[in-house]
Image 1 (cartoon, rainbow, N blue to C red):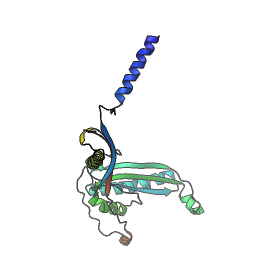
Image 2: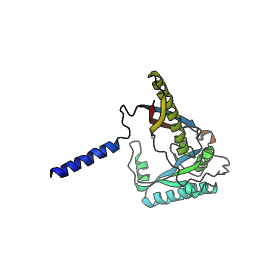
Image 3: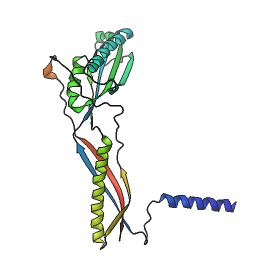
Image 4: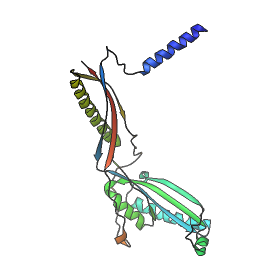
Length: 241
């Protein structure tokens, strides 16, 4: 029994020792630095959320009206050359509606049921305004926040990590200088960054649409693309001479 305990103890010690990537001692002189940095870029891709929400006195009426509007909206997007793979269902619901305090008795009777459909639509950022206007003109009555991104978020994140590592090296060089020694090679580095959202299946093609005269065009939604920012925090260990 004692031998088994000893073997387990030795295995545990070996596991702990192997988990320690960096050992600091007289034979292993190092400087450890944590640095962060960020990089921004113009938006190249927009993920729009558009939809249609309606009420009716019966469930069938709510359903059929929603299907009619949904077909009109999605047809308008596809006619504008938005790839079908760039349109994803976001919400889909059909059921009884909960009356709001401001509703009159007549409104409560007319709004016993509700139906809702919405879609995520991925398009080039330069075409986001056109597609939003097109969907609203086709009947969409819901537009949520736009997600702005770049075509290659992993590359943008890698750039932020590279800048953070360069900053870590500069800090380590100053620390080594203060210690009266010289900075050596990088022996370990880790990058902590948010997971980049991959644009799964997105086709980066230009869309085309002819909007014509929009009703109440003076009230048209105006989109202002945001800068895309990527952050990175690097933990780096350098040897010193």
